[in-house]
Length: 96
Length: 489
Image (cartoon, rainbow over all chains, first blue to last red; front, side, top):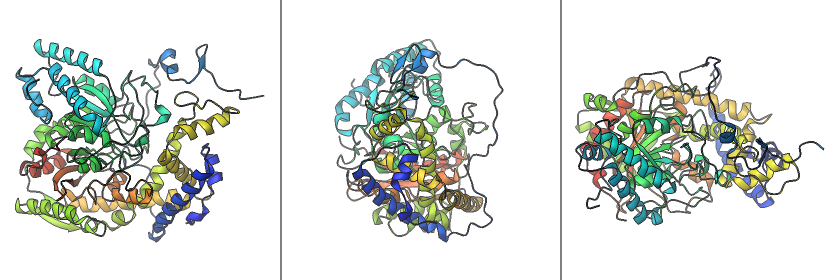
């Protein structure tokens, strides 16, 4: 397992699409360094041959019948949109 | 209103409604008056639908007058943590990101509460997106502990716990990902139940960590927590992790199960970091069960005790980084006013909309899922999770339930731990492994510190054996008077 100092906060913040100030970068890097140092302890556990566990529910592969049913109306779906026009969500220009 | 209804149990209120001594309108008005009197100091509520609640109360009274009351919850007000959707009402998750969001639909638990005649009266404060243990991470300011207004109520369901403890509401719903129902219940001196993963639908619960999140009940008494659970539990086809199992009549099941029980005490849950007064109160509770004829067994959960927090903060933050990617400023939620282009809009909207703890967890979760780190962090955590689940399964084969402290410490001062995230995380040491294993857990009041702060006893049960867990907790509760004590506000 890698040490906490391996955290490249610029790289990760870019992946997360999160703009951080220089102050936040320094503070989060220090705090997350503490946490990553703490989780290093998992290296002590012998996990050879252990299956990973995604969740605790005794249910798998749940399928629904492919049947049309009523959903939100356009008005309901757009009610929380920050900007809308002609029953569509308006966004800044994507392509030049 | 002449009677002081503030601390009556939901079960007692049901009796008064049924006998005609109380109307639902009077009850809702009484709650609103109590909120008016104390919530300026407690700050449990993010929003209230007073007109809607009074209209629902009138409808309930009319049903009852016509002999068509829907059951024990008809006419009873219930508060919902502000992470559970109520159609037409705000759903903020205590985040600037959703400050203006209005739910377009009801969560399944909300639908079921309404069908039972219960009245959703308000949405309660929490740590932003349920990330925290103190309710200090709310964008709208912290909730205070009703027992000491300078202290935290716990979190993340701090508003839900404080509203009950302050006598503002008889029943509330919370959500629990690593202890977020049980820990605030303990710190506020009430009952909090986190059901088995899969018992209660998560449809309409804003997701934090999907493999761990579970909605549960908070109340003055074990019976009340069971009553509310019965209304919300059961399979829902809109949540693919919801379990197809018959929901028992919890009240009848609890009455039927009288023990004595075999109870395990995990020795590692009484080690360093446990406040001596908390430890003494929990030991006294264990002694009570022994004297009541229960067999007390020392058991060992070394991996859960040593590694649960590390496993949790890898798995929960990984899931959070994925779940919270939906908040991008495009379809709903906060959108930054100034952005160069659509990608910059994501960056700026998320920077402005999320608070510090949410940003920290997104960064951590993104890091542990990123190329080169996935196997070392996330996959290893999932494997240790398997070992922790197996450890619990082994001890619960020989025990009906496990007993431990809920929180290692009583309510701490507002601001005391907010600069040190790791210190805050360590307060969840006894609750967090229960979510990893998907088990039911319950906190019941078991005493007070010399300073007058509540202490909680945690009971951990077998999967889908909420009835057994509730019965064991009730046996303790009935023999003690902790739930009769209330803060002076």
